[in-house]
Length: 456
Image 1 (tube, helix red, strand yellow):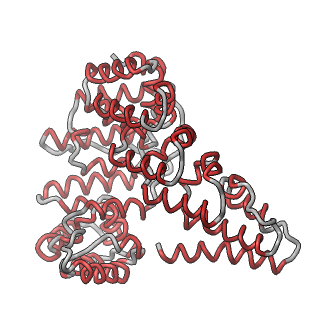
Image 2 (cartoon, helix red, strand yellow):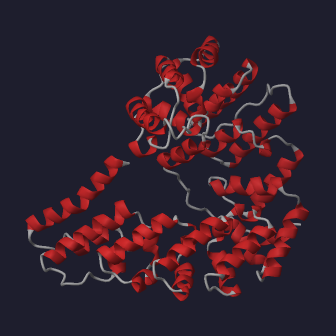
Image 3 (tube, helix red, strand yellow):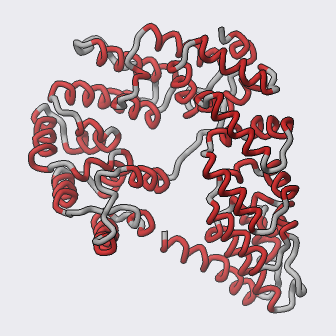
């Protein structure tokens, strides 16, 4: 009946998890099949055109643009021209494409233009229009003018209310007819009253997810999540709400009971849920499969349970991805004992790209002459960016070794790669009295970063 969770859940402020726009955009563009696929025969030609088009027209980074392809530039070009004619800046358009990439293949004249004209006919200024639609562009995907009006007005009211230094409630005196819309607006308003921020709140409004469509069930679920102690300003709050809303009390208790049979304490299960709410989305079969896969790495049952407690996200990794990562590590020369140690220290390693793990390990071992044992001792290096972190620092180390300032062997891996940029520069660059040498080392360090930034 949720009592263990409610009893043991304590409200704690957690740090906001922010996603880089480029990462979100990459993920969305990769899944937007309507305009991200192309045939093998004309793939190369289409790819070249797409990269050039997206970089020149949208200002997207080259690496992101390479993941997209249009068969015909007519639609996206017309959409971009239409948006710009209504005052949308590149920044607005970037936000729109990030959240709603499908808009680029809409019919500009037959679909989008009438909607923009309709909103302007209702008194929306260019500033109001661009500000509102860049925050919730999915409004433009709606078909009926009535729905467009309802959601546009509500989003506008939320934006305006949030601009005040004092908290203002959004007036719901004239709710639309229709239970689904009425419930959705009321529930979004309830979330806002709890402190859920715009970045999490507004996307829920236009979502097709059933989370906000109910009334009694939503209130019950919201009450439980609040009592569990989730911070409403974080994404975990919304994720937990989705889980509680999706499953019945009986279904959740069955999931908890299964975890207890595996060897967890009830408190451990709730602690994992607090750390990563989607953990309870996993079926008994999926959890059992992950346990068996980790046993292949040489981990014992109690070690696997400890790993789950530390990093419950790993339960959701696909079997194929995990097995490929394991095979890659073994092929690189790591023993099963090494593999078990790596996973204990860096559980997320089981979900890293096999290609990435191979590239990083070979660089550290072959280019820098560090041993596999050094990697086992500091497995976090497998999660660091090769281009942004590892290579720039290692180039500085190689430059110092060439000048005879560090001996013939590289220093211990951890003090080179596991410390902050500032600590690294103080330890290996700024401490030298020779100003020319410091300038050279800084150029080596920053030169790699600049090169990487330009290629992204």
